[in-house]
Amino acid sequence: MTTIERAPAGSLVQQFEYGLDAPICLTWELTYACNLECAHCLSSSGRRDPRELTTEQCEAVIDELQRMQVFYVNIGGGEPTIRPDFWHLLEYAVDHQVGVKFSTNGVRINPDRARFLASTDYVDVQISLDGATAEVNDYIRGPGSYDTALTALQNLKDAGFRDAKISVVCTRQNVGQLDEFKALADRFGATLRLTRLRPSGRGADVWDELHLLPEQQRELYDWLLAHGEDVLTGDSFFHLAAFGQALPGLNLCGAGRVVCLIDPVGDVYACPFAIHDEFLAGNLLDEGGFQRVWRESELFTDLRSPQTGGACAKCQFFDSCRGGCMAAKFFTGLPLDGPDPECVQGYGQSALAGDRTVPSSSQNHSKANPTRNQPVMLKLLTRRPVSACAESPLAGYDPAREQESR
Amino acid sequence: MDPLLGEPWTLSPSVALRPERFGALAYHFGNRKLTFLKRPELVAVVRALGDQPDIRSALDAAGVPASQHAAYAAALRGLAASDMIRPRRESA
Image 1 (cartoon, chains in turn cyan, orange):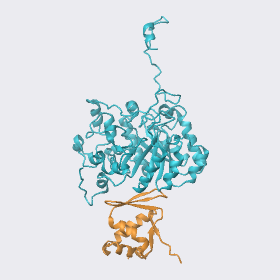
Image 2: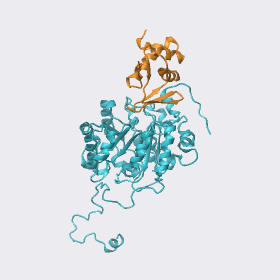
Image 3: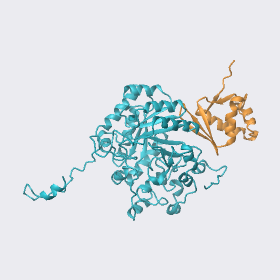
Image 4: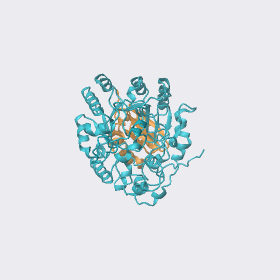
């Protein structure tokens, strides 16, 4: 094992780069099962994995997080609230000094649950919404999902739950709605949280169509600077710091250093956006548990060693953006020591235009057959139109081909 | 002389400290604020507050030289602003 020489002092950011004894920001996806089939799902969720951790195993994880003094976890999925033991695990965590923030599409936040949530301390609720209007939201999250989210927010407000979060993945279609999102959050006494669209999971399939255009990145950056600490970002947009001024937050990639992800089967990945064998550090069911994976795994040790900036090191903005997001590079087939695909200085675009191979996914829990909740990112014409001047009603009809495609 | 130094203070009951190489993380379960205590000496001071009659004694107990008391008083004010530490009311 490599031992990293640690400077006793040094800036906090340097200390973070060496890694902490326990993560600050731990995401735990409780299930791959989901009622929705969002087009950009980071974890390609849909179906429950039969190896999903049992209630007892989840309790043991919470016990360990308490011992390691992980003060809070971000619980997600899939849709975590459809696990039958979700509410039990929530209480178990809080009773063991592990605060919970959970992300939900709102499907189970009925008036009763909202009242229960309002009565607890140490629980934060984050409702996912990717459009300030149903039209924009349902386009990628599926029909009815806007109404579900708004009903949940209303139930929370009516129950007296304070300061829910509205979590928005910024896309080409919704980035023009930032003021409307803010107004919506204000209407529900909630806080707006904006995060970056990553080409991870099913997000890889839609990234080209959904990710921000260069001028939209600038628009977002200016909006974030103007709204400062009132809007949360989960430190998502540090690649935008290369526009000039740093945004609030740490502005560094925390993967394996201060951040990691536990998936529904207990696999530990470097960050929530990197569910791929390449970033798999170990499984917490193995000897030594989560603590051993966090402190001793080869992958995390590696991520905490000094990283080379590669081609980016020569760029005058390298100190601001540190080369951007590892996951965004990986899933677009770019080298990890080169520019981010959305590099604001334009180096990403030229890198994307060059030779690259997009890695295939290493897990997929998407539903095998689409359900009525699947978003229809409308491409109405599935067949090439016949020529406009073909007059025969059977123009373009080929009985042999038609037979084959049945 | 800063009057704060003569006051009795304590760590807030909702705050947990997690030791780290640079000092400690302080987490407030009530307001969910996370703060970094960037020097081991500051961690020692914060831990000592509740057992000492006043802040000056806590600084002495942690071995902070008098020349740095003003700087530490400023840091403690910062922690008080997010309720990491709070004034101690002596029970009669």
